Every structure is written in structure tokens, then in C-alpha cells.
Length: 478
Image 1 (cartoon, rainbow, N blue to C red):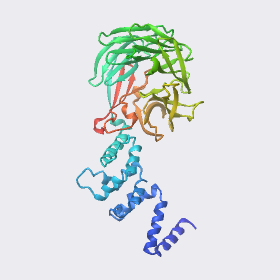
Image 2 (cartoon, rainbow, N blue to C red):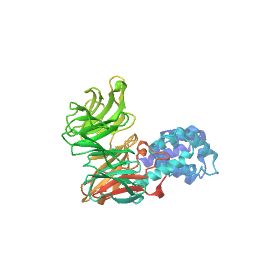
Image 3 (cartoon, rainbow, N blue to C red):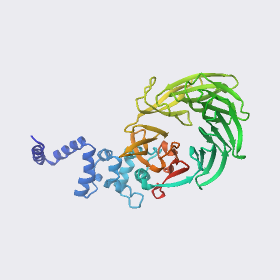
Image 4 (cartoon, one colour):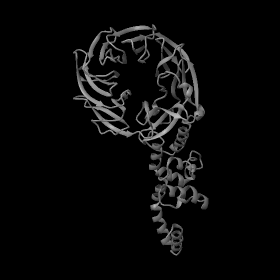
């Protein structure tokens, strides 16, 4: 029997049933329906045929079951949610009010799917906020919604970028570092430094690691060198500073990690037995009992170490090692002794191939070790470079061949959903030539969207002497 014959036979049998039997049959059929059928029922059939508030006569359990089949897109196109979105007005329908108040699971799921952080308590006001968040997510992929401001940062090619609040540090081939206030688009400081492999800064000092085998601290007050740290025999690739204990930590292409006195430049420790590749990243994590300092470091061979040292005694205690194959990507380190890294292979962990993995550092009082918190697959993004990441989103840069041209895109990846949130095209003329990798602007949204952390400055890119700030247009701001 084909479908048409079966349908006619079923209709005939159904019409012969009494009202009670028809109702029971309908109930069982609804239980068998999936999202496509229930969406059709909610959005097409009932609104166009009944023109009534049919949810008012349904049991709450059945109403919530139907509502929870809606995804973000269909929910905000449905008559139901269009009515719910008007509840900020005085004309509140009591049935809709009851449903939206009771059906917490729907709003909790929709908020999660839109990449928003879960509020402590979900109220009707979140419906309107959620609608705006979904609209903003769509605008992020539209080049017309991105406004560009171009700054001629220097008279030579730009080699390095570092953003701290409204202040942007720009390293140039001329070995100068230019400090720009991007809020007012003004050059505030110029430091005659050296070639830049890594830098960061605070209100008082600029900290630089250089290919000239040295690191240095520069005073903003005098715009001159405060202290030089010389002793590596190859380029210094990373620098971190502990101002509380006046320590400077450097990692070098000579495979060593060194600890220096902040004020005198005297070398306190040199560790040559930890890494056997270029040391790409070093960072102080925490001061432990007994004046021990916990450090994380990574190298170009793909090894990540956590270890401790005491600067009064020239010793180190190798604590734990994590091996991976994404050799030239350093871990993203958070402030709560956690970090994430893209892994292509993991011999000693349960991580899957092509995944982004989050680790915490545990057992600080005894033997600190890595603990895997979560591992999420990275789907449908090939030849990617991790630019930045938070606990909810990661941003990858991908070069794709579009027709005959190579085009650069930023992929915003929803880690928890293991899906691409948006794909944003980087303007072609900003990708040509040798330039540092673009950096993110606002970063707080990487942990999930809130009412107050919508990205305004999306990213910063470089073309030769020009730095481009890419903003979301203000008329799309949530």
C-alpha cells in the first residue's frame, strides 16, 4: 500500500471514531511528532486555521513539550514568541504570561543556544534580550555591519600588536614601540626600543622580549629603558613580570627559561633542562607555600610544562608535561590557573583529535598536575589558526581559496555547541604582505554574551604601515 492509499484509509477509520477516541488518538500522534511536525502545527496550521489562543486550552505539560521543540530560529519566527516579545508592553495576555514564566527550560535552552551566559534567574525580560542577541549574531557576519577606522601607525611596517584596554602598543620594523589611545585615535607615547618578539605593558612600564637576545623594561614616565636583561644566546620569544616579588621571566629560542631581578637585571635562575625547543610562552601562575613560584611554559615542539622554582635556590622541580602537535600555537592562559589549547593528538590524555581542550592545574600544595576539564571537537574548520578563546567561544583565522583568490576569514566557534556561530570576512587589502596575525579587540564576550559585553571592537588587523580597527556598527549594538 502506498502512502496515498494508506492516508485515505487512515482518514476513513479516524472519522468513524467517537470524540473521545479521536482525542486519545490525537494525543498519541502528538507524542510521536518531532520538531518539524510540531513547528508546522504551531506556526502554520493552527495560526492560519484556528486563529485562536489554542495554548490556553492545552495542559501545561503538553504546551511545554510543544514549545521545547522549537529551535532559536523557528521560535523567534513563530506567532507564539512574537506575542511573547510584546510582553514588555502593558497589554499582557495572561496565558502567554503563565507559559513564559513556567517554561523555564525553553528560555534556558534558547539562551544557551544563542551563546549567552545563563542568568541566575530567567524572567520575561530575557525574551526581548534574547531576540536582540540573535539579531546581533546575524549582523556579525555581514561586512556592511562592520565599520573600519584606519590608523597610520608608523612610517615603517608594523610587526607586533598588543591591546590593553583603550591603549594599543604597536611594534615597528624601526625598533620603536608606538602607544596609541584608540578611543581618541591619538599617539600618546613613542619608545625607542628594539626588535619585538613579545610585549605587554601596564600603567607604568612596557615589557619587551627581543630577537636581539635580550629583554627589557621601559619607563613610560621617562620614555626610556628602565632595565635590560641580557644573557640569552638566541632570540627572547616571551616575557612575563611578577611585580609583587620583582621578578622577570623570559623564554628563549636558546631552549632556556631565565628568571631575573626586576630592578637590577641580575639573572637569578637559568633553566636549561626543561625545554628542548624554542620556548614560545612563559607565564607566572601563582606564588605557592615556601616562596615557590608556579610557572607554565610551552615550546615550539608542542610541549606544555608546569613547574616550580625558588629564586633563593637554583633548582627547579618539573611537575607535569602535556604533549600536543599544534606546535606553533601557545596555550591560551586564563587568570584562574586554567588554560586551553588546540590538540591534534594527545598520547597521555583522553582528548580527541581536532579538539579544543580546557585544563586546570590541581594539587598546588603537593604535586601540581594537569586536569582535563572538557574537550570539544572542532567541526568544519580546516587549516585553522587559533587567535583567541574563552570558556564559550574560540576565534580561528582561516585562509580559504575563493574562486582564484586567497581570502582570510575569522570563524567564531561555539565551543559548547561544537558549531560555527559566525564566519567573518577580513578585507582582502588588509591581509596582503607580511604582517602580524590580527588580534581580537573586546574579549569579555568569549566567555559568553551578557547584556553588557556585546563586542564593539571586533578585531585589529595590519597591512604594512597601517593598522585597521574593525568595529560593529553602532546601529546594531544590543
